Amino acid sequence: MMAIWVVVVVFGMRSLMLYGSNAGADGLAPERWPESAECRRDANRMNLLMFLHPKCFCSRASLSELEKLQSHFNDQISVKIIFWIPDSVSEDWKQCALWKKVQGMVGVEGIQDSSGKLASRFGAKTSGQVVLYDQQGWLKFQGGVTAMRGEEGSNAGVEMIKTVIRKSDSRISSTPVFGCALGSGKPADI
Image 1 (cartoon, rainbow, N blue to C red):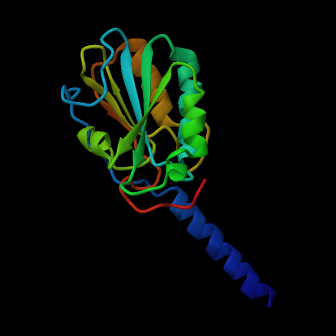
Image 2: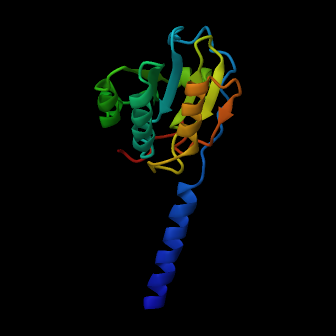
Image 3: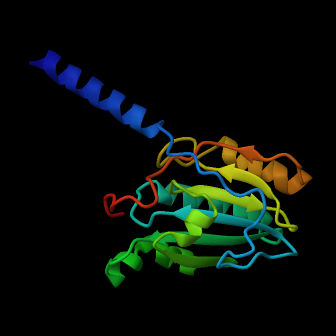
């Protein structure tokens, strides 16, 4: 009997590890800020957009990593957090804990993206996807800011963004994004 429990636990842990390290679909952001985008680009600072699914459990970790990053570069980046909102959901669904948290963040604009129009315009496919554009509207980074699904801590995405902001690197950097698909049903409530 004990052997069966060991096998079940090992299998379960392996499944969780595989899921946690499985990146979402790669989005492809436009190289130039779309002038027809429903949000304005700040011509005086770099522009960072994070796309979140409000019901994805991974979104909290992505938002936490963004908060840490913003605390170091608040005067150098304009931050917009775009929440994908499907058609025909209740107001309670839209007013989730993450939305309320973003509303309380200083220097951050929260945008509810009805039907994912803005996410589509910027090529975002996975919750937690970040795009960073320079002051002239050129893409400098696209990807995620966590190393695994729902995991906070040191990761390549945050380090690449720091490098771009500090050095105004001319190359486009990218990392995998770990989160739920934007445009998919409703993951477990957070």
